[in-house]
Image (cartoon, rainbow, N blue to C red):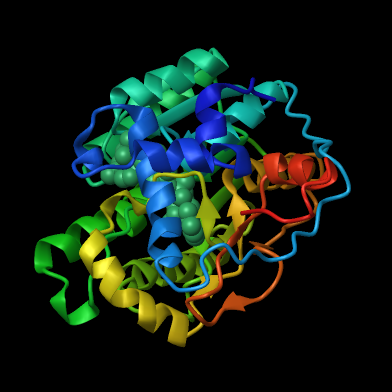
Length: 344
Ligand SMILES: NC(=O)c1ccc[n+]([C@@H]2O[C@H](COP(=O)([O-])OP(=O)(O)OC[C@H]3O[C@@H](n4cnc5c(N)ncnc54)[C@H](OP(=O)(O)O)[C@@H]3O)[C@@H](O)[C@H]2O)c1
């Protein structure tokens, strides 16, 4: 497992909410520090909800049974994670390396990507999935650098927030190039070279089939990727393709493209349509579970897991006086330490 540092604290957990909020101020988004960006995007969600009356109400928090990690043995495995400069992809890369894998990571933000590559003693492939040449290069460099590939995890996506009829042609094109065409091109380049028993996983979304206001274009792109995956299975029956559906997850950069004014406007609609989960997944927690599942599947080449689905436990938020629970380890420790079993 990767080591814990202060920035991990900042992105999650009860203890860090105060710190996160203190960092938010007008212009905060522009501040060029990783911490501020993370704190801003994460805490803004909470602040928006917190504007409702009865601020301070907290939901009972159900602690997990323990902080122990699932069995995640990647010894001798060669793993490519596309979209690994932040969020779920970064966490999966760190977990796989912690379990003994040799890892290659791809994404656009070179500094973040190289920092991940350094942490995993792996290979960084700075690349833009919207560029077909870069897609070919990701496959070539990862294959050459790792000497073959056993597991590919596609985590890259962009998520603009815009009503579907206001989505402009360039936004549609960029969205589909990144979320659909790019991962499929990388896969097409890799397939002939993948080792027997290999696995290709695509991270999908809870919003497929259940779109909510403002993310229609994004969920359409994820639906397209899901559908393409069915054809991959059909045309390449000797390879395994796993769709990994995740629910709303805290501690990633997913919301960075969200326009805050639009989000405020959309909040009542999200509440009315039950779009907000009561419990957010924690990025590291869910990534470790995903990694453990994929590691176990690599050990069992006779099993194809077509769908892995990870949602936050509990229900949905239906009124503005509810606040989301964040299912973090810090929260669990806090709850066990006798903080009233609540996480705020
Ligand atoms: N967070 C959630 O609530 C949630 C819910 C459901 C599904 N998901 C899915 O989970 C996956 C991971 O998202 P996340 O939440 O971890 O968000 P994230 O932190 O924003 O991660 C997205 C990754 O994709 C990379 N990426 C974006 N555009 C790219 C491009 N053109 N070329 C190469 N890499 C690109 C980003 O790196 P660069 O910007 O450096 O390129 C980043 O590493 C995504 O597929 C997302 O759709 C997330």
